[in-house]
Image (cartoon, rainbow, N blue to C red):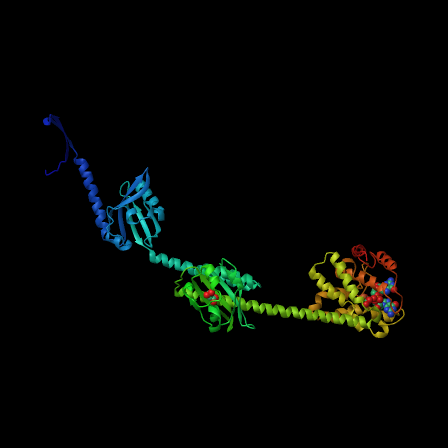
Length: 526
Ligand code: C2E
Ligand code: SIN
Ligand code: SIN
Ligand code: FE
Ligand code: FE
């Protein structure tokens, strides 16, 4: 009933002396095989018409295997969108290695994934960048039959560019944050600028950069920090404001750009530097903070640069940061300098006071200087830190400042004191406390003036402190003070011999003095 049958015939001819002398034949019904092939073609045609009108690209390909390894593939069918999205024409029947030479090397993952899908039948999707075409594709791969695959893809270059753009923005933002944190945390300008330049060159995608600092007194720009230079010629760079590109950027307060340094024949002072380094593109950006030119940021690249507005804006932002870094460092330095100067002025004042005290207490002249030096030696031997030594020094110099409140007729009396006079004399320790407490700068130096007449056994004054209740600085000082007092002549007695003094100190260990201090003192061997 109109049914088509397919046969295949196999004929055998017997030929003798060039004559056909016999013929036999076998026929085979191959209708079923033919039907299967037709069904396949039909389904492939259906695929074709389905994919022909899609906006996505469509490629039907056969994988070429070598020892089961995917080596290449042939385009069996593609749609219109394929040509539009890739720009590739007349590819059907060609190998991809002919259509896109070098693709095996640039995109090995394609062969791996296509091969895997064509052999396993399991669909996969992925995104890839085709270097030679400069496009990003998102690809879905199916396998309608073994060793064949269908790739349906879309050009996602725009989306990828947008993602990359956002990624770049984020990186730049985080670089700015790193620099900001550095500016606020570090007092060391060179260190800050080095971190700055490292981030700036990386984010701008340039080979080298340097910061020149403006010296407003000499009207010069001097190298301060650099990154990415091969040699150290840049370190010797010193320009007058107005000289060279960088000098011009500072003078005219504007960005100076040289697109190709090798094509300029002006007598640059750093022409040699530029040649050795192989720089081509150059930018100089003035660093301006609070309306003042703080320096110049120089950007060097060993190829031409084709920056977009975004790059230029970022360069501007970086320059603003560098200017703030320099301004901050100057502020800190000025503050630091005036602090140091203030400290020095204070210490000079204290020494002046202590000399005045010695002068009033005529017989004890030089006493303060001697006990101060000896106390520092003993305190250091007992492991006091540099910080503590600074306070001990001030305390020792001022230890008898309270004697300013003791009248001359008592202080200078050439005889032993009466009980009433003793009451007044002993007040000098309390007076010292009252005088020094309101002075912030000397508050930490109070221990010695206030407590140098306390005794280890608790019988001293003004508070009768005992043992380690007495600040260590005061325990140390007490030994030295008595040692020097006994060796010296006083209006009411002659100075003692060296041996008697040592004997007295040893004997007062654990009574008047802290035994550990006495031990350390005797070890000093004075
Ligand atoms: P200073 O003369 O510099 O004596 C400091 C400390 O050394 C004394 O504190 C005392 O601990 C010890 N020291 C000084 N001289 C002697 C001494 O001859 N024998 C002994 N055992 N220890 C001595 P102190 O006792 O609290 O005295 C404080 C200050 O009072 C003395 O400083 C001195 O300016 C004054 N002072 C003490 N005794 C007399 C005195 O008899 N006559 C007068 N005019 N002033 C005295
Ligand atoms: C400059 O810093 O003035 C430009 C660099 C050069 O041209 O040598
Ligand atoms: C001194 O010798 O100048 C001071 C004596 C004392 O500590 O009162
Ligand atoms: Fe005293
Ligand atoms: Fe003293």
